[in-house]
Length: 212
Length: 212
Image (cartoon, rainbow over all chains, first blue to last red; front, side, top):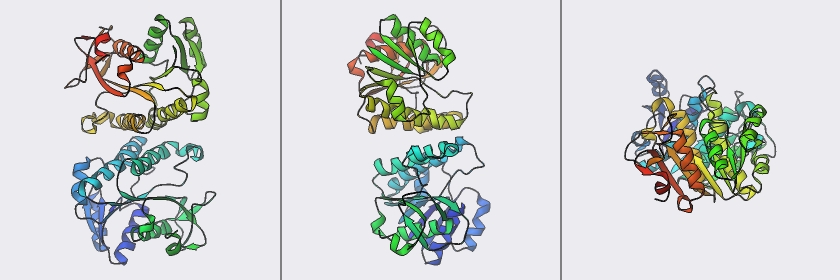
């Protein structure tokens, strides 16, 4: 499959790219900084200049011919909340509009645990959750995309375990490697279309959990 | 009518309150800072403690028995973009949910010109427009409120003219006094329900323009 990864240089994005390349997919790595290009070429992916501040019509050019899009971008802790608004919310929605303009149906969003319920938003992260919430809601209600929304718990840098619990009754942690693995398997699993899936590390192999 | 003004202490909010009081409405002024209460009592309105960081169920308590709600709040230039997310976007949406919880149907939103078209958003104000855009969209598509969305142009402190142009072909300025006058007349004008109205100063008397 031809898969475009938005935010390919992010911590989860890089893992998604390498896993997709490893299983033989043709991966297009959306990057803002040209200096990141060589690393993706070396890794067997095709770097593509991509800026979520652009308009949907411009973003759509990069999506032409893709089979799926993964949104793994995040404005990150170093930038201000202006970028939370511009990237995590409006950038995400523009990428959805671009996907529809380009005729790409499949769209996997990396969101965050607790996003659907503002009563559970950690106080200090509230502005970030506001952005993620309205982006997720737009994807569910204002597009006709074949979406999957993944809402992982607290992201960890530990080695992947290959095992998760979906839609847990309480919060928890999950390795970035397992989030990436779940995203990659979601792309190949029609049962995940139209689903919002909370995700922490647990006891179920990802290959099984993704079918649930 | 019993009317609740969210952001009553703002520059437009204060004018809305005084115009409503002047025409004999019972006005409830939502304020965050108790020190603002006396001024509203002196002006013939009833100050009500109200914080858009609260949850919808809490906000709904203040809305019980109201005939209409006017959203005139804005996080303002002094606060950070975290408050743009928390107040202008999520706070606005929570107030809509609260209105529905309290059984109040009528809701007038003070938005901003160009909000529906991100290509026209002034670059430096982009984060603010992102927040206003998603709040307006939520009001239109995710609620069953009898809404009116007013999108005034560049806000001026000049004396009111009493005359406007609605849905102009280009941008322009409008006095805060005329925005407030249009909002007040919208509340009494069923023809404005379900409409999004751009607004600059012009040649049509507000009493006529509001019927268009």
